[in-house]
Figure 1: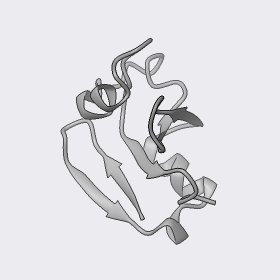
Figure 2: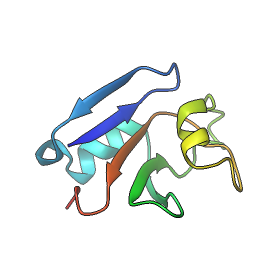
Figure 3: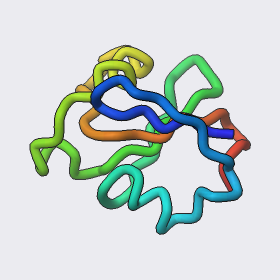
Length: 85
């Protein structure tokens, strides 16, 4: 199971069986970048060009990531290590 987190804060579950590379690209709206949330077994799949595309900041995803280096832009997929093949 994974969670789609939209920039408006809306969250929805998605079965990991539905998360092909193409489907993940559709959800985040671009090329996939993996972001490991340090100190946890949580991970984000984000649009690697979200900032260049001037996507809205994803406050929840940025908070989960600890706002360390940069804000997370655009819709994301949150999953636990080992949950997505």
